[in-house]
Amino acid sequence: MTTTAEPAKQIQTFYEPVLPYLGEVKARLSAIVPPDSQLLAESLHHSLSGGGKLLRPVVGLLAGGATGTLTPHHFETAAVSEMIHIATLLHDDVLDDADLRRGRKTVRAVWGNTVSILSGDYLLAQASRKLAQVGNIRIVAIFSDVLADLCDGEVEQIRGSYNVDVIDWDSYYRKSVCKTASLFRAACESAGVLNGLPESQIQALATFGKNFGIAFQIVDDLLDYTSSESEMGKPVLDDLRNGIVNAPILLALQSDELSDDERESFRVHIRRLFASEEGDDVAQPIAGIQGYLEKTGAVAETQALADRFIRDGLAGLDFMPPSAERDALFGLGRFVIQRRT
Ligand code: FPP
Ligand code: MG
Image (cartoon, rainbow, N blue to C red; front, side):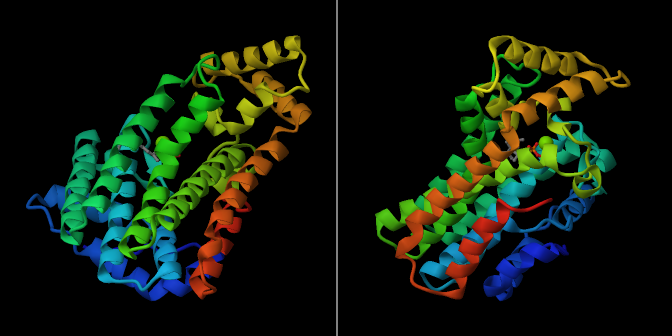
């Protein structure tokens, strides 16, 4: 089994200090125990060679390298974070009926939903095996909590989908912490645990990872409005077209710039978009929604919120001694809130 994942050009700068160790992680992903089933082997090969950015392993390795000496246990744990990530995508593509991911056919599109789910399960089984090999009960608990969080976050998202009246900021925050931030948090926290850091420093790493993940999600939401179709490979307002009320919409809905009537009219546009069917002309609700986003300055406000999460996360990392890994971690934190794709 091989992996061809290479980080995208821009972000690669921050990968520099851990590039040799990333090879160790890729080797571990390639060497997972092969299944007996040829079908499963093919679908796993397809998933593992999907060209992901390996962002969770990189964040974990930078956190580990900035606070200690990287060991094979760090590489195993970093591989686990990527395996869980890929497993969630295999399951998510089934929930979303998605046929394309990163410009390639999804496993479910090629081999069907059952194989996609079972491939994700197989990866989770292999991730559990790796965690057992690391032999640290606290690390096992950290990643077990991630699995629970991922399920919680996904259900929270489903609960609020296609319903603008259900989702509020608390619900959005909970969903983002569970669904997106939990793996980044675990990658950083486990690096601190493996390095035997004092508890306060482990917690600072965990908070950084969590805030990094929340900021990453908020910027992802933002790109749904600000990035062009060619940059993101999906239509503008794609989240909303798929029933997901995300950060800019939530901030715009609660903005003081809107009168009660405007707020209601904004909701009506969203409800119309949610009620539309494939092929319907949605130009009017889309224009209405974009108008309210502009009026409320929601894009700038959303960007400021992502900035705040990164700043707060980085503020806790003062204890890190100067190093290339520290600089890259800080650089990566600032990069994710400025990215365009
Ligand atoms: C992708 O996000 C999906 C996730 C980050 C989490 C999905 C979680 C589950 C399916 C539940 C539990 C799964 C496991 C394996 C424990 P997205 O849908 O926002 O982004 P996308 O545009 O990349 O699909
Ligand atoms: Mg999805």
